[in-house]
Amino acid sequence: MADIPHPHGARPRPLSPHLQIYKWSVTMVTSITHRITGVGLYLGIVFIAWWLVAASMGPEAYEPFLRAAANPIGQIILFGFTLAATYHLLNGIRHLAWDLGYGFLPKTAMWSGIVVVALTIVIAAGLFAWAYTVRMGGATP
Amino acid sequence: MKSETPLHRIEGLGAAHSGTQHFWRERITSVALIPLTIWFGFAALALVGGREVDVLTFFQHPWNAGLMGLFIITVLIHSTIGMQSVIDDYVQQPGLKVLSLLLNRGFAWLTGAVCLVALLRIVS
Image (cartoon, rainbow over all chains, first blue to last red; front, side, top):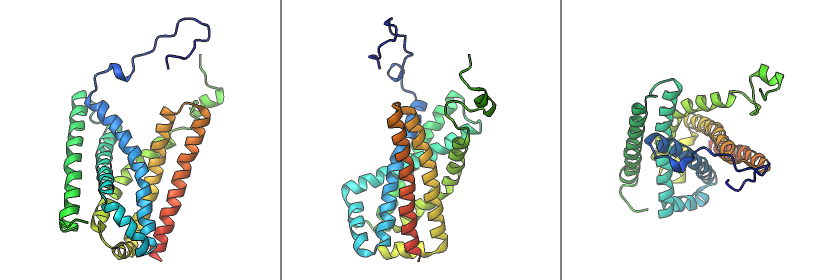
């Protein structure tokens, strides 16, 4: 960015301070996390497509999908997917409240962000624990 | 000095060439996705680690097939708009920008077609 030559050879125009100059706040972190989880979920659509295609093609095609999902890397991806979906859903509700004009006070926005992060961790961990204990009976895949 | 053409001023549109459709579509789909995502989460949880037959039986129920179709379409509309705003923000080179926007649209149509065809195969 700093290397852009000035058309008239004069000294470069002053730039406004960018990200690295500011102290990170709760609202900044939750904002960029909303975007990052959104991009992650976008890529995750591929897994949903794979799941449906594998199921539609019979047991021989479903077997590799199940093995990939049960694999430690698959489990980490699935947990990340669960975490991202939970966060994006909860923080999305926060954004909708803002769209309606609620919760704009700095303190309110900070606390709603903290609540969203806390709820995300509890819900995502709860969903995964449920999947392990209730659904799989605690058995290793 | 205004950089808008008189026509643009009348239409209320600037260099973005479009109005508020994306803004509204993103919000409408996000509201629809609240119940749909919760439904999908519980559906996925009920099928996790199960056999392929369980998935087939689940989606052969018309309600589940219909909700899954709606979920996929709504997710793709919402995420395409979301990814477009990411591209608009970070991709500055015009050629690369057009290419990424096309890939973004292509991704949605392709995954949408794949998911819906798979769903129809399961249902029929």
